[in-house]
Image (tube, rainbow, N blue to C red; front, side, top):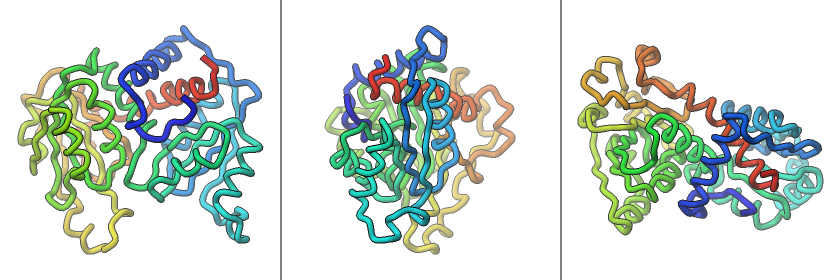
Amino acid sequence: MKNLISMRDLNKEEILYFMEIAEKIEKGELNPNMDKKLAALLFFEPSTRTHFSFATAMKKIGGQTITMRGTGSSSVRKGETFADTLQTIAQYAEIIIMRSPIEGAARYASEVVNVPVVNAGDGANQHPTQALLDLYSIIKTQGTLENLTIGVAGDLKFGRTVHSLVQAMSDFNPKFKFISPSFLKMPEYIKDDLKAANLEFEELSEIDEKIDELDILYVTRIQKERFADPEDYEKVKGSYILEKSMLKGVKKNLKVMHPLPRVDEISTDVDDTEYAYYFLQAKNGVYMRQAIISILLGGV
């Protein structure tokens, strides 16, 4: 495997291999050494967790990072093409980790450089490293990825994390409950993939409608920055909020996950319940990103 661009590129065995390596790194059974390796973190879109998580992961395995945020201080402002910028940076770093607001940007980058490229989020399309850390969080809390009932709530139209998560879980016979305002439903192409795979899903409008059936409730914020018309965002913002009172009668093993940042879709009174897992989920991202970098650079 040279690049990590989309969950569609990974088969079940490869996904489980990422889980295995992340677990060994977390337990201290595997200590990859990326000494003298450099990761270029190209973030053309705001990010806190993903950027810090990758930077932390690289440093924990002995490597170093260089960072570009936006294009304001780069030679792109002088008229340099994106391809030339990428090829130049590829002369300095052993791996490129890139976030872009443009769908397909990471795929394009992987076609013009000769070092591994990791998609750290491209528009509303994919966020495969988030999906892998989500799966790692699920397997840690449930003991398995197989035959789980997963509620996915929020902005299912623009939420790249849920697109990648649904595709990533599809090899493990899940049942999905898609919970969203009608304007923000899961894209048809993802539902078509589920139908083709004979996987069960249903679409709901209320977050607590079948919450007692869930093993995982994955909540996402409404992606304000993806709306072309601000009035459309105003119509749906705050349309669902998970509150502590809604968790009465849920399964004991339920875990509430969120890729963060949250806005108002999970009340803070959920934070101190046994079901809240979103901050530990973020911690798991460091183990998984250590695994991703190590695998792509041949360190394990």
